[in-house]
Image (cartoon, rainbow, N blue to C red; front, side, top):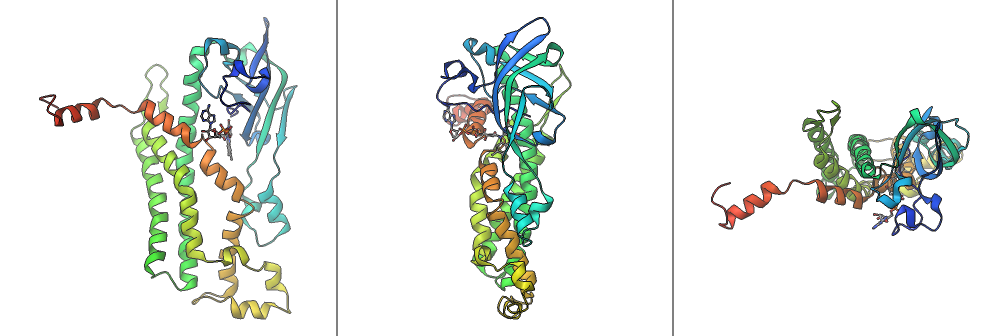
Amino acid sequence: MAQTDVKGDRSLRPHEQRDPDLYVRIVERNKDGIIVSGAKVHTTQSIAANEIIFIPTRNMTEKDADYSVAFAIPANTRGLKLISRPMKGVESALKDPSFIMGRRNVENETLTILDNVFVPWERVFLAGEWQFAGAMAVMFPTYHRFTAISYRAAMADLMIGLAKLLAEANGVDNKSHIRRDIVNLIRYKETLRASAIAAAYEAQKDNNTGIVVPNIIMTNIGKLLANTEYTNAIQNLVDVAGGLAATVPTLQDFENPEIRGYLHKYLVGKDTPALERAKYFMLLKELLSSFGALFTTAMIHAEGSIEASYIELYRSYKYDGSKKLAKYAAGLEDTL
Ligand SMILES: Cc1cc2nc3c(=O)[nH]c(=O)nc-3n(C[C@H](O)[C@H](O)[C@H](O)COP(=O)(O)OP(=O)(O)OC[C@H]3O[C@@H](n4cnc5c(N)ncnc54)[C@H](O)[C@@H]3O)c2cc1C
């Protein structure tokens, strides 16, 4: 799904940008379809997709009508260019056998350029109806944030498992601050899981279309927590682990007959052989290094930035019940 425009000067609306292509726009309409120009960014897995869907990234005004455009096109459409980012996680894993995750978990984003692309009318969902751009821009992230709180809970589970194994390997799993670190990770994961369950449980059905939408408040509460608490979760994990998260020797060192004896002797933990303990550190190092930029940025920005969830929560929250309660408590209303 290609939603995020490159956006240029963020303080300006689409039609105010110095270069009109900084938001995807309609440059021409004819009887067969539209011609679009512009670029989206951070488009996940587009290189593996058959079809790419483009939707607006924000609400629009009448002057932005040409930017109120949504459509789906095959990935081999003439004029569509996908500029892929380097895949550091994979590259590091291929160079360094100590890194395992990068070989199994491949994700990629592109700068997704539309160089005067023709889209036939039957593939166009929005073409100038600026009043609907905002609703479309909000609808997709609600689903996307719902998937986010689900996969982020699973990722937090990995962090809990790794923290517990490291704590046991270091012989500190009964120490009070280590327990606190691990419980903080449990709290992080289970709050995400709870918000995902609540968002599904309180989903609302749109009677016009039959489409079911996750609860927008629960979804954004979970997503906001995932954004703002991720770096604390990393702090908890690294606090449990210790400095070998950065300085652990490599697997090649463990295979080197001249030095491996020292490693097996000196990197041993409590009841945990040195190589097993080192592999836990190697996993943590991979999470922090080759995947570090991706995971940290994704946890803060993917599925919408922190501010996007604040805006959504402030706008969508139903205040009536809370205001009535406050009025009742202030003696301004007789009944609840
Ligand atoms: C790993 C990853 C995968 C992603 N996958 C996809 C995808 O598949 N499809 C897709 O469409 N998008 C995807 N995104 C994009 C993601 O939704 C955006 O990164 C996010 O919305 C932030 O937009 P931005 O990166 O342009 O940052 P910016 O919008 O530049 O944000 C930077 C800061 O500026 C603030 N800011 C921006 N504009 C304003 C304003 N007008 N007023 C006040 N503050 C402002 C923001 O709140 C934020 O604090 C992905 C992002 C990542 C990191």
